[in-house]
Image (cartoon, rainbow, N blue to C red; front, top):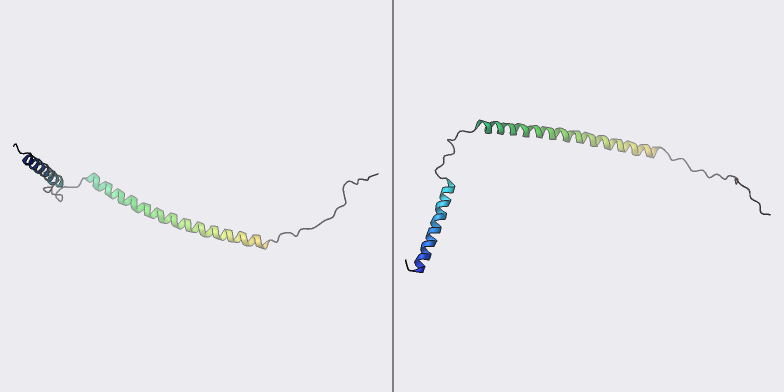
Length: 107
């Protein structure tokens, strides 16, 4: 091969063939996924994950309901405190005039 153009075409064809074969091998078109038996550890792990998720959902519901009860009680307590503060009248200020403690005389 003395032609540089032929060498370039051969190189491009080789690289293209390499990548096409690589993509074909990576795709695993011959692998059958339905006949593979599942690992019992994986099945147990999936079941545990579902149980934990269900538990966490229940716990979140309990926390949300307790939080709502707390907020209602807090609002009622704040309202009672405000009404009590308004009901208790502040004592009226008295103005008292007292005699002076020290009498000074200028002679």
